[in-house]
Length: 203
Image (cartoon, rainbow, N blue to C red; front, side, top):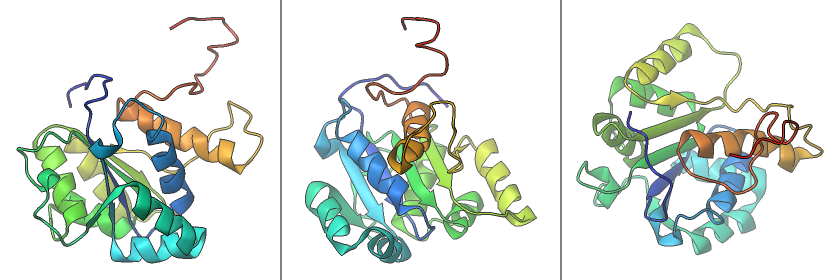
């Protein structure tokens, strides 16, 4: 997978599926708004269950906020730019990623816009990040993660870290969302870096 540069012309898709963890998707989208990526270059897809879980976990008003801020595409609409390899969209982040979505991507079953976009990212050697959210994992889940990894995607489970000593739930969520942005080669200001301040290292 090629390394993509930090620049405002980047185009990214965020897909939200029916796994629990809508808070990760919401914070990720808010963080994207303060990166160099222009708003019109950020696309959002909800699966049917993803929308229902998002509304349940965060409230209908928060779902409405996302719809009014971002361009949200129907998961059954294949007549969009990033459904084709000719598109200049270079990143798909699925957050959270359900095990069903993972299975479709791992099997190459492009039955909806999310799985089709993932297929495009893999075949074009672009960025695919799956923020999986399930526990415990069975052997089928693990085998599907391995297949996606071998195809060039990145599995980034929603496992928070504690190096930064997060003081609240928002800070804890940030340990995952900032990691996803970093893996996607999207620069985020003031992100935490292990031992950077302690060693006074300027990067």
